[in-house]
Amino acid sequence: MDQLFSNFGFRALWTPELIIILAMVGFVYFMIATKWRERFTNSEPVPIRKKIYFVLGLIALYIGWGSPFYVAGHLMITFHMAQMVFAYFIAVPLFLLGTPAWVFSAIFEKLRRPWSEQFAKIAMNPIVALLLFNGLFSLYHVPFMFDSLMQSPILHSLYQFLLLYGAFLMWWHMIAPIPSTSKLSDLRRIGYIFANGILITPACALIIFAPQPLYQTYTNPAIWAEVMAYCLPPGSSVPLSVFNGPDSFTFLETRMDQQLAGVLMKIMQEITYGFTIGYVFKQWLSKEKQQDGALTISDVPTVK
Image 1 (cartoon, one colour):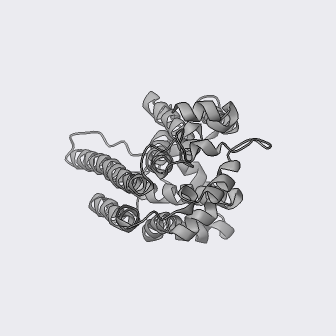
Image 2 (cartoon, one colour):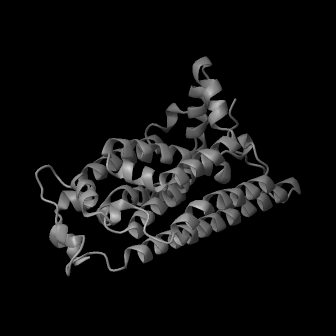
Image 3 (tube, rainbow, N blue to C red):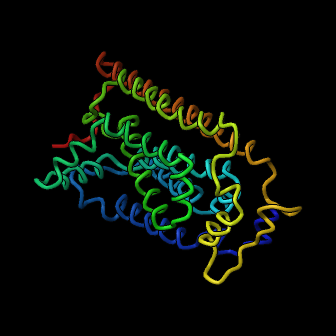
């Protein structure tokens, strides 16, 4: 890590503009959860655990889209894959768990307009969500696509937002923040989680079992320098010494780094999906107890 902190400045390493944006999102969230809560129909006090989930989601998204991981992800694909884990497999479910159900109800109510209702119906289809995120994730890791996006900061940013949107749709059907509106039964939700694990496997396998390094971003000095230049403030020089040579940041051979990245993604995906299956089982058992009369039924607000 010494190579990072000695060769890159504060703005490149810590992405302060992202900190400001996420701080503003957090401010709006806490205002909605407190002072602005009365403006929402059927609003209730937000439990402290939900607030913690949301803050942890902001931190995870910052690690995924900013922080020193952002620069490190341009040097080693293992760090780049860790960024994706934080952004799409940790931050998104935390946001869904941390947002009150009555906020989602208000959003759905706003979407009930002639021009948006049909789009929302298609977008919220579980099959569409399943294919959208996993398709975008797999396409992103096709070598030509990956290198092209990394060399275009605007397209890369747009693709990141599209991936985030796809991740929200995918996780929505797994987390089911509003159980009364879920299109999948608990058993089908578990099957849905397994399906996501299967569909993401080919992209991980491509990275793990490729006989040679796939991405020029990590092998071609000219392309790497072009990509790295977008991470730095205007006018900054690209420190080529961290790419190769005795002071190189990369502590693994390129193909080994690539294999580790694929293994990391698959393991972390399995861990997050495993926790999600446990979460679904817990909800399932809670419903069974309610039906048996062991608990008082207290469902979240139903979207009209």
